[in-house]
Amino acid sequence: MTGADQPGREQDAWADGTAWAGPAIAVEGVSKSFGPNQVLNGIDLSVAAHEVICLIGASGSGKSTLLRCINLLEPINGGRILLLGQDVTAAGIDANAVRRQVGIVFQSYNLFPHMNVLANVTLAPMKALRIPRAQAEEAATELLTRFGLADKKREYPDRLSGGQQQRVAIVRALAMQPQIMLLDEVTSALDPELVAEVLDVIRELAGAGMTMLIATHEMGFARDIANRVCFLEEGRIIEAGPPAQLFTDPQDERTRRFLRRIVDAGRM
Amino acid sequence: MSDNQHAWYGSASPDQPEPLSPGLSAGSPAAGFGTAGRGPRLLSGGGRRATVVSAMSTVVLLGVLVAIFLAAPGSSEVRHTFFDLHDMWQSFIGDPRKGYYSVGEAIWLNIRMFLAAEAMILVFALVIALIRQSTGPVLFPLRLLAMIYVDFFRGVPLLLVMYAVGFGIPALRLTFVSNQSFAVYGVIALTLSYSAYVSEVYRAGLNSVHQSQVAAARSLGLSQGTALRYVILPQAIRNIVPPLLNDFISLQKDTALVGVLGAIEANQAAQIYGSTVFNYSSLTVAAILFLILTIPLARFTDRLIDRDRRRRLAGAVT
Image (cartoon, rainbow over all chains, first blue to last red; front, side):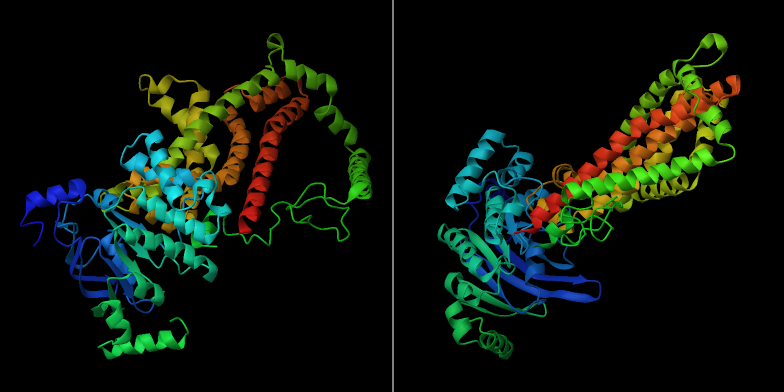
C-alpha cells in the first residue's frame, strides 16, 4: 500500500496524522553512500503507528545515517522512504513540511545557545507553523512542566546539565507536534547518572503512543521499551524481532557476536 | 561539553586565556602579561604597592622619552612647527578670510562619512559573505563574482580605489551619478574596499557556528532563511563583534583619505592650514581629534572581548 495508490488517504494523513492506517514509516531498499563509503546498503523497514523500534549495532553501522535520511537531512542514493503513506524522497517534495511531521533529537542536544529554554522550544512553532507567541509559549510551558523543566524556562542551555539539555531538546522537537520521533543515541553523550531521566522521558512518550525509531546503545532500555529491535551491521538490517527473542535467541551469527561483545563490556 | 558549545565559545581553550594585547603590568612579580584569571588587564591587580610601582615606572618611561625629545638638536624647530599652541588653536577654529578651514569643523565630515560607510558596509559585506557561503549550483556565477570582488578590493590599495571612484565616476558624465560631492565618492570607495575585508570577517563568523546548529534548525522544519536569521546569524555576529569593531576603528582613520579628492575633512583642512600659514601644528590637532574618535571605540572593543572571555569561562563550568 503506497501513497501513490491512495492519494486521497495520503492527504488525510498529512492533515491530522490519524487517518492513515498503513505504516507510519516505510523504508524501502534505501541505500546511501558518502563518496566511496557505502553507509546504507538496501535497508527495508516498516514501522507501524504507535510502534517503538530500537536500532542497535556498532558505531558506523548506519543507525544515525538512517535516522538522518528519514528526516531528509541526508539525501539518499537509492530506494525510497514513505512517511504516513507519502513518498518523501520523491522529487519536488517540501522537505520543511516533512520535517514538521518528524521530530529528531541528536546525541549532542544541539540546543540554540543564544536562546533561553522557552525561546528554544517556541522558535519552530512560531516561525514554521506561524503560531502566535502567547499560544506557543503556553504550549511550551505545558510541555516543559510535563517533563519537569518548568523552572528552567528562562535558563540558557549552558546553565543546564546534560540530562536537562537533552530533555529540553526532546521538548523542542515535541513542540512541533510531530507524528513520528527519531531519537539518535540521545543518551550517549550523558554521564551515567543522567541517563535515567532522559530514558524516563522516552518511556513516557512511548506510553503516550508516540511512534518512535530509536538508535541506542542502551540494550536494557531497548529490551524494555521496544516493540521490535533491529540489529544493523555495515548498512544492512541483519536481524529484526521482538526484544525477548532477539536478545535471548539471536538467529544470526553476527547478531550473536555483537551481543556477546556488549555483554563482555558489561553493558547488558 | 558538546561540539556546538565549543563552536559557540570559540576555539580558544577556556583555561588558557591567550593574551590579546600586552598589558602594562609592571607590578606583578614576573613582569609580563597580566593573565591572572581575568585576562590581560592594563593595571594588573595586586594592591596599592603594585599601583605605586606601575605609576612610577610609567612616569619614568615618559620622562625619558620627553628628555630625548627635548635634547634632540632640532627639538625647538619641531616644537614650533608641530606643537605651537597658538597655531593649534587657529587651525582648530579656522578663518576663511585667511584662506584656511576649521579642522574642528572638518572632523564632522569624517564622522558623517564614517557613519554612512559603516552602515553600508555592514549590509553590503553581509550580502557578499552570504553569497560566498551559498552552495546551490545556480548561484555559481554570483559566487565567482563575489570571490573576484573580495580578491580585487583586498588587493588594491584604498588610495587607488579612492582616486578611481572620485575622479573616474565624475569623468563618466552620467546624470545624477557623476555630479555628487567628493564626500559621497569617498564613502563609496571606503564601502567598496572595506566590504571586502568585513565580508571575510562575516564569513569567519558564519563558519564558527557548528554545522549541527544548522541541522538542528532545519530538522525542526525551519526554512533555510529562517534558520539563518534566527539561529545562525545571531551566533555568528556575536562571535565577530570584536574583529568587526577593529575594522571600524581602522575605517574611522581612513576617512582621512577622502581628503585626496578635495573634500574638506579634518586631515585636508589641516594640510591647507599648513600650506597657508607654514606651520603644521594643525596636523597635530587633526591627530588629536582622530584619537578622540578612535580611543573610545578601541576601549569599548576591549571591554567586549573581556566580557566574551568571562562568559566563555563561566560557560565552561558545567
